[in-house]
Structure formats: structure tokens, C-alpha cells
Image 1 (cartoon, one colour):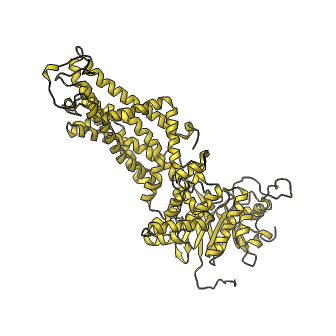
Image 2 (cartoon, rainbow over the protein chains, first blue to last red):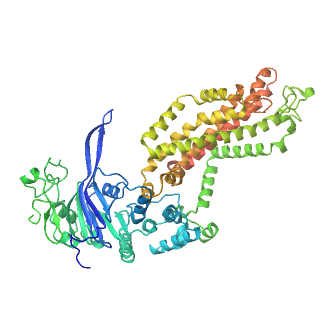
Image 3 (cartoon, each protein chain N blue to C red):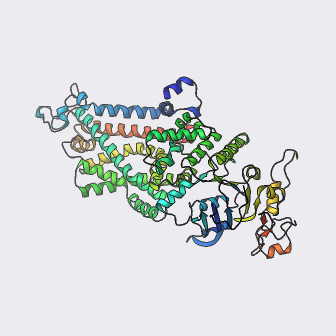
Length: 330
Length: 303
């Protein structure tokens, strides 16, 4: 594909600007608000082209899940905006919201929890059809369910099974089939393989890769595992404490990480040849200094300036940028 | 489908059980618990007796307003296993017909209480916030009165009749189900499949009634079966007090109330309706306890 400059007239598939989600901390008998937790603290993220996959990496607690919930309009943002194809998600109501739901779907981390234990596979996959296309005749709905199951590598016979009769990988396939039922354009993949056995992970990743090519889907893949992101995505963002700290083409970010946190994430990937666990790259805990870099207390390369000044994004060329005073130097 | 599945896999593991087999498994577990089995069989027997009362009763005409002056207050004996009452009616017949009233009234009262309580609890649990507060505070107010006292007050207000007594019981009973369902729904609401349904654009009412309520129902069924006995007891109490069933209805509580006058001289008049109440309440309690053990994964030993 040809490079797409910033001057293109078409709206980006997804454009997130200054997204914040803060939760109040209430204590005491009167449930007074004592403070705020910034789960998502000013996230910018752009997916320009349809048919691409963008990664979002970060450890647990970095705000990834809250980010998704806000993205899908499942919880209102505190500030900022989310635009899909140029349209602000906030304030979508009625028919517009349903149209948005048809175009943007999600695959959850835990396929066991994401399926109602009392519903058969067929009923689960048919659920979006019954809601969005209620006038579809029963026979056609069944045919569509069978088609969807085959599309994700299951058999039409699986429609009669209950989730507890399936393996974890099969359940995740069911969740994917359900997400695809309305022919969405955009899929949010929330840790789609982290609840699965390693051997099954590869199958699901291959399926997702295959579906993207066949259906022209755009992915936002959330994962703590950079190897998964490397497999599926062209670009990635790295999230720490509710903010993006680095972003760029996956190959570049992995080969030349510019932010200490990204380096730590890469170093934490298990490697066979080492024969031992990787050395921890970050110190544990520590309170972020007010006005300084949030990573400063844990960063091995922290200097005096890091506790005083919040670093801006530094452009490293080629669409690669990092939010560190010493990006490219450390 | 289930027949082929059974044929294909003679010894399926617990994960591969089809729905029909799982129900059979539940029945087997119920029968393995001896007390629950006794309760279940007794309930079944009572239901059959009630259903076939017109066939089984020696004198079906005595169920209501027959009068036989020659046979007043006969002790139990051949022809009248439970004796006769002050109007010469066969008490066995009347107790048998009383089972019809008690079981039917209990079922209607429980069903009505469920019909009010379950949706309210589900809405409170799912909506949260203002509606949750409104519904649950009202529920607390109703619950703060003892059920029997409240039912008595409502029944007295509505007027003395069997129908009104049943309505009164339902109106004083629903908050229990509201509480149970709300607690279940509040925990179910956080499950990913609810979030998944929301992301799919499933409307709130569908999430509540297709996902949340069916998953919240197991403890409600247990409570309802336990309550069946209490409801029958309450109905008997209301009838005993004269604000439930009215003569000549052969309701058990009403029989005891009438028999009270002959208590010292004709022991059988109060004894047999009393035994019927005792047996029914005990049977439902045993059955309910058994169901609780089966439906609770911790005591069942499997999901």
C-alpha cells in the first residue's frame, strides 16, 4: 500500500483525542470523593487506514480495559473524544448507536465468561442477528449461524452445544463468530489469546489474521504480550498508567524501543535460550512525582529532570515517537 | 438429537452431558438425598391425592355443603377413616379436598409473588442508582413487617375470602424474591457476557429477561419451594382467624378453627387437618433443602 500522509481528506478509521476516564475514590461514612484515579489519562490514538491492525501494549492496570470500554461507549469518558470514521461516539443514541454497534465489535479476553452458560452456541451467535435483524426468517438465521461457525473453523453441529461442552479455543471461536455476525468493519480484540493454552493461541491468532485479510477488517489489538502484537499488527502503541508512552511501526518499536517502559516490556518476554527468567528492568512501586514523568520512580535511567518535568512526545522519524526526555538516547 | 448423543457416547464425562441428561442427573441427585427424596415423593403424593380427590373421596358431596344430621361427630371408623364433623360430613373427604385448596392456593400465591418480586429485583439490580434505591427501600419497608402480620392486615382490609387471602399472601411475600434476585443480578451484571451483550447492542430489557433472570433463578426456585410450606401455613392461619377461606370451604385452617369447639370431646376433628398441614409443610421443607443442596455447586460437587 502507498503511504498515507496527514493531509488525506478521508477521515481516519479511528481517531482518539485526549481521552480521559477518571474514577472517583470515595471513602468514609458519607462517601465523599477523596480523590480521583486516572485510569485513562489523556490518550491519543489514530488508526488511519482500513484493513490494518494496531496494537496497544501495556501491563495489567495500565488502563487498557477502561480504554476499550470508553472506546465502545460502554462507559462515558471524562474528557476527550472518540471518532470512528469521523463520527463522535459520544452522544450516539437509538438507531445511530445500533448502527455503530453493527460496525464496531469486540472480542473479549475470557471466552468462558463472555458466553452465557445457559445459552447454546447457536443461540449465542444468533443473538446479534435477532437484535439487529429481527425480520430475518428463522431458516435464514440458522443458515447464517452455520456459515459463521464455519467461517471461524467450527462445524454447524456445534450450534447445539453448550459453552461448557467446548474447549477454550472453541469458545473463543464462538465469541469471534458472534462478533462477526453483523459484518462489522472494526474489531476490538481485548487480549484475545491470553486466557488460552499456548498451543491454541497460535490457532486463534492465525484465524484472526486470516479473517482480517478475507473480510477487510480493521483491528485494535490490546495485549500485554508484544509477541502477539508483533504477529498481527503493523503499528503499536504502548500504554503506561493510562497514557501512551510510545508508538510507531511494530518492527521499529520492537527493534529500537525508545522508552524505558517499552524496553522493560520487551525484556520481560520469556526467551528459551536464556534458561532463566529475565532480569526485572523496572524497580517496583514508587509514587509518581507531581508534574514529573510517571515512570520516574521505577525507571533505571531516571535523571533529575524526570522528577521535575513531564516529558513531551519526541519524534524519532518514520512515525515513531516516544514520551521520554531521553528518547533515542537511553 | 439427545438420543443419538446418548447412543454415540455410552459413558459421557460430566462436561459432555446434554441438557436432558443433566436434568436426569439432577433428579438422581435429589433421590440420593434421602430426606429430600422423602419430601419430593410426599409432595408428589399429595399432589396426586389432591388431583384425584373426586375419585378417591368416599363422599365427594361432603366436601362442601352437605348435611347428614344422623352422622354428626362420629369417631374414625369404617366408612369414615377420619370421622365426621358437626354436620355429619366425612372428614377424610374434606381433608382431601382441603389439599386441593392448599396446594392450588400455595401455587397461585407463590406464582404471584414471583411475578411481582422477580422483575422488580432484576430491574433494581440491573438499573442500579435511583431505581435500585427506590425499589429496595420500598422492599425493606414491606419486609420490616412480619409476613403473617402484614398478610393478616391486607386480608382484613381486602375482605374475608380465600381469593383475598391468597392475594394478601402474595402481596406480603414478593420482597423476599426481589432481594434474592437483586443480589444475584448485581453479581451477574459484572460478568463479561452481560458486557458482551451490551457491546452487541442488546437492549436492556432483553439482557435482564434473557440473560440475567434465567441465571438468577436457581436460588429463587429453592426459596420458592421452601416458601410453599410457609405459604400453606400462613393461609391456614388466616383461615383459622376467619379472614381466609369461608365455610363451607374445606380449607385446613378453617377445619381446625371449627374443630376447636369440639377439641375436648372429639379429638379427630382438629387432629387430621393438623396432621395434613404438618405433613405438607414438612414435605416442602425437605424438598426445598434438597433442591438447595443440588443447585448449590459447593454442595453438589460439580458445576
